[in-house]
Image 1 (cartoon, helix red, strand yellow):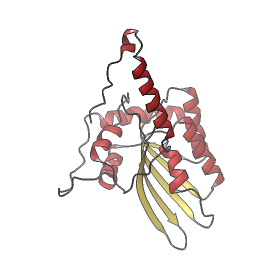
Image 2: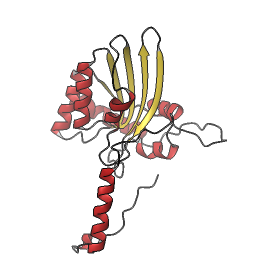
Image 3: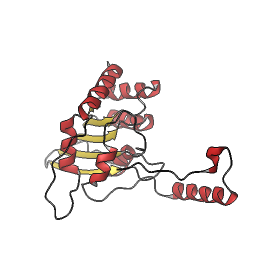
Image 4: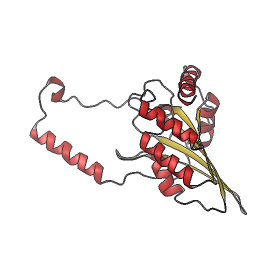
Length: 222
């Protein structure tokens, strides 16, 4: 998926945009803020073009300013059940991790056990990490494993501390291996209607990038 190119602006040459352009930008910003903070995408599968771009485990995630979260929820009790689906950040104030706990699993039944696995395009931000920690401490019957394609701002001390605190709270953090990307492709990515399912084709540096992020995560969590 090609990265979206921004329209040239006079501000790049040190000149302000016209008053009309500035007013239009202000209106657009207000409209974005007035929109709901997230959107639950109906269905279980995301478009292949989104997967190929957003989940790619590149070192520098230029243009990848959304989070895609695929989830599997296994509920164990008198009647066991499994549900799956995916969420994506739809608006500027959106966090897919927050959306999961607000809508998919707003409350845990103390008589049940929950085993949850996330496959996320990038690791949670500090705010979402705090929400995850809070939820795990509050619900001892919940187990959460997070498989991430990339590490988000891992160089920042605050982010490193958040990842360590997630581990201490019982969250299992893992970097997605090539086999994990294939699993997401097979179970969460939609195929073209009327066409046979296509095999997952790994990108050239998928293993190298996995090794890179796995090493960084190990250094942070040691």
